[in-house]
Amino acid sequence: MDLAVTDLAARLAPGERLLGLDPGTKTIGLAISDSALRVASPLETIKRGKFTQDAERLAAVCKDYRVGGLVIGLPVNMDGTEGPRCQSVRALARNLAEKAGFTQPMAFWDERLSTAAVERFLVDEADMTRKRRGEVVDKMAAAYILQGALDAISRQRQG
Picture 1 (cartoon, helix red, strand yellow):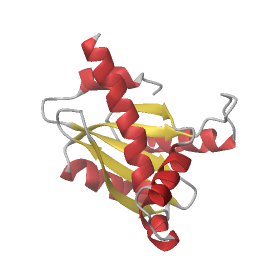
Picture 2 (cartoon, helix red, strand yellow):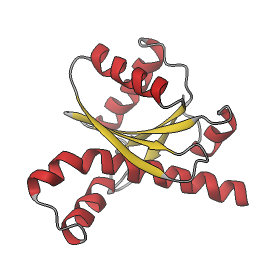
Picture 3 (cartoon, one colour):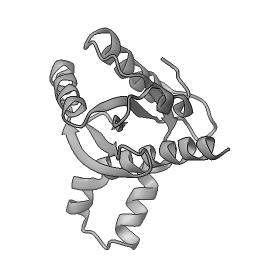
């Protein structure tokens, strides 16, 4: 379960993509990579409900976009320790594999400050209203997380 993000690419079939998840208590932001694993694009935000419903939506996205692996944002504390939120995210991943039957490899990505960075961008650069920011911040944070993972994969391929 604790696969290094740089090992995900080797597990993908040709043309498969990675799905980035930014799991929160109320929503799950989703982002999708291109098949070349270079660019992350915000996809959608799932309003969390019962686990079964959330898993069904994630499974549908995986099927529709030929997703071969998941990059899940892990909300590590600023001092590098893992708290209750990390435990919740790890439980989500475990449940996707064990209860929902997800077979795609999953890797966690340290998402410290991802939401803050996206919020800052949306305020400073995009000049977005608070309401509009609330609608896009989770999927944008998922794209930020996934892009970090894609950049790490790219660096590993070059090195």
